[in-house]
Image (tube, rainbow, N blue to C red; front, side):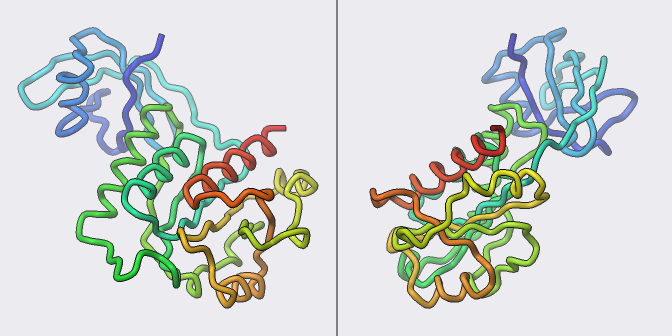
Length: 243
């Protein structure tokens, strides 16, 4: 049986209880129609997953009584997605699906061919994080997917990652094959990849990333939409890392 699932900071534990308020409280009571005594699972996004039961439900909060807990285990390398910023619906879909598949972090990237004149409006990062949080809870991830502050391609620090992939449509036969890198990937602590915007990368952006050590690869003969490429390649990585 699947129980409601939330993220809460360990510092929020008081007298063996978590207290849900705000959006999480409304979701628990108004959407899920949970009642006192129902089971709820909670991750502290750090050490433990808690198994709780609902205690008192008030007008604006609900208490979750901790009954048991198990340690969270980080398995395999963390995968970071650098996503060149897409139009609203496409960007939100990438964030949702990449979170469900298992991306540890998603960094919005400004590149030469993002939507002209695009600016990240106030509250946009909060909205993207909310989408990632909801997807993290829906698929019961042990750890939240974090939306990191936006950056430009020249500012990406590739040296922070053991492997950094650059999938793009013109890699052709010169592109690498990630399958042959499975042993190396499984020994890695951090893997990252970047996907371009709707208009793709410029030649200078590709040269800059190559110079810094990005590994070019092709995703096949079909030209994929940017959002499809992100989800497709993350799925490939997830499959290879589990092989």
